[in-house]
Amino acid sequence: MVVALCLYLLAGIGVTMGYHRLLTHRSFQTPRFIEYVLTILGSLANQGGPLIWVATHRVHHCHSDDHGDPHSPRDGVWWAHFLWWMPYIPHLDEPTRYQRYIVDLAKDRVHRFLDRWHIVLPLTLAGLLFLLGEAWGQVGLSWVVWGIFVRTTLLYHATYLVNSATHMWGYRSHKTNDHSTNLWWVALITLGEGWHNNHHAFPRSARHGLRWWEVDMTYLLIRFMSLLGLAKHIHVPGKVLHKVVSKRPQVIEPCLPAP
Image (tube, rainbow, N blue to C red; front, side, top):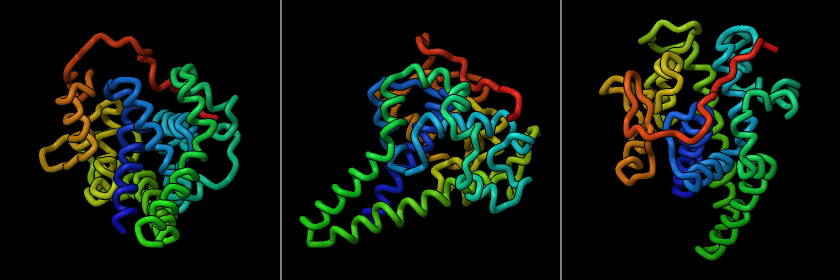
């Protein structure tokens, strides 16, 4: 259980801070080495490579709860929660189709490499867990079961609750052109992603919990990184913290016609 919890938090940070707030929205800046480390952690979540994950989420923002949204509850709660992920959908699964949403990331050969070989990372982790578990006390299979299968399942459903629950239940702090909501218990298990209405109101904000009681662990970690000099140009509503001159492309979310 300890192995599962530790890897849940590491892979969760890889998804929330790495895949989502950094790669998808460029909510803050960090050295390239840290960016690649966060991407590797995100790959351990078994939710796909960074390119297709980012492309899918950018499509979601462009067509949220409308025609073209990959996972809207308007197509059914179970579809929004996990069924959308199962069928082959050309505009989300064919690189020649979805790469138009990730022109910025596709230029980076490291991200292309990590996207192509993302499945190797969790397989390598599984082998490492088995070896370490056996060395610890012949519990290698137990570590693999808890560290890979149980942890992946829990993190899957936590992530999918952002797609389903936070578009159906909760409260709305901002008028947006979708049905996004804020839901405290989803924010708790997703390290701050459950303040979804706030996020849809301010997509580029690194901070999703905007009120003092809306705890956002991912944002707190980003601020801690800034104290260490590892995070700059942190976007929050109305201002930018630790502003520096950016050398990276700032065209983040190209909204194209719905497929």
